[in-house]
Length: 331
Ligand SMILES: [Ca+2]
Ligand SMILES: [Ca+2]
Ligand SMILES: [Ca+2]
Image (tube, rainbow, N blue to C red; front, side, top):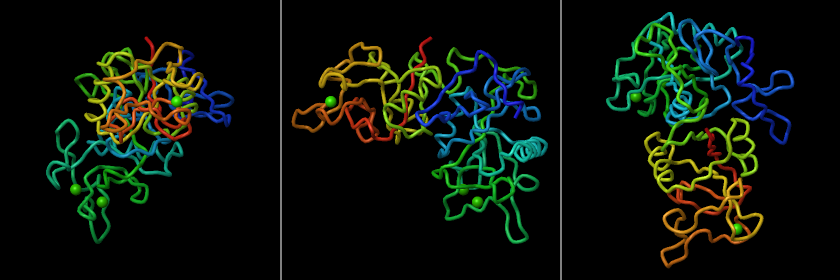
């Protein structure tokens, strides 16, 4: 794994209460580091050079296809495009050489629009047949099993040949750093101002950690691990931008912790920096249609949730519930 080293500026310790590193960080010696961070070369952290591609193996994450795409976007990447036999071979060799061979990986390609018409997210065609797709003497993938396999993966039990699979199943994924126009030349695109795992939404750098189901306190630690903080949303335009982004990226079934709490004084909602949480409409959702508005949970509900079931309005909920962190990186 490229030595497992990280650039000094990228070293961010992120230990949970158990003393273990919080994904995407992994333990290297006594430190928690981003995996595969290259010390040099054309790839930007946390991508690693594999053949002529800069790749990131998100081995820690169990994500459906849309979630996997969103994670890659948060790294200024996409799910990896495997469009030549050499790239396929390079990746499979790397998987075996680095002990990454215990799982399936989502890769770019789907036939959602027209059954049997496999396209990359760029719209170009996925190569069919040998030596890409799995085949036995009896059958060949893609087989659209159960009439419901529209997303592309490299499958462990198919020896990392291509397989069509159920888009809603949770699997790790393989991201590729998006390069400049000529994809055969490794010139990294200049990074947006947001660091890895953060994506620009409404002018903010936000990390939607769909792979972490955590209490509010654990979620805060995870945000700290990425160099951020549980998000404070004070501009209603930002809430609108988040709402649109969740639907655009297909992750609107997720609920996210924000940094608001009234644990210190019941009814007095503050962000983690002690500034006030805006109250009322249009931030907080309705509890019912008889005039009761959130927050309505009293002393039993002291943490601020963007609840999918509540259409991502502000709602108070039980701090020990397991939800996804929504982190903000302050530039
Ligand atoms: Ca299909
Ligand atoms: Ca299949
Ligand atoms: Ca409360």
